[in-house]
Image (cartoon, rainbow, N blue to C red; front, side, top):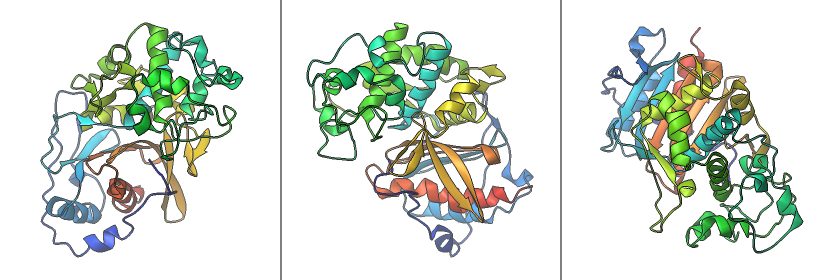
Length: 365
């Protein structure tokens, strides 16, 4: 997601550009629906909304590939805007944001006793298939934690087109699971982290084999039903038949907000512990670095500098501009969806967060 960059703010002059825009944006309080989410009017808050109005004026009238921008402050949705003919009720392809949701599901699988420990070898649960090529003793050392931190040692790097495990190459194969397990080892497990989508697929398959449920059924039973999330589907852009563990989530922006709030509140939803606080803390705490950015269990830690301090966002990311940004210090969740696939324009949400939302609310006492 962050190839060839450390902090991908590619629109650093955003506010300077917006300052010349005419303010024609009309704010509307997000609608209160029967979905378990609270809303509030931004005008009721003691903040200067200049930056927000400037940004949305340009975004509504200019060219961009945003599909939605939602902002939650103090557990209430205060901004909900949709762009480019998208609507609130259509599930969006989350791409790699699905990885971070798989991390939550792994925590639930451990909480429920389907999986004993994150340090268990994957061979304890992944009974079929098993490696048939490039047999290497180091494969027996690969743990669930190595999958979650993308440090398996397998030759799998989505950002290296020469890598045998690069996701586009794997998508052309008949059996994604077998092909991934048959990749050669290039590093000792736990020593080097490379962005590897196939490792996240193995996470889902381990949950499935350990629980006896396909990943979609497991997610519905133990996560989505608890949060009142029903308008979802699992799919893929591949024209081949894709196993459930290889599919991505399609979800509405409001339901993405629910997942952000679940992380913000350390695994609780409506005072019920859906996934343990310990797991959320563990999953969103840095364990390694990928391209210089702190990485936990399929969750990024993105630093934003405000004045003389740094604010950390616990972030789920997806190609095209799909983001769940959880900012505990400001009791805030920002959700974005977009259509800027394989483009640097998908980093625009970082600029919005950095130059619009954080300066607006960090001054709030």
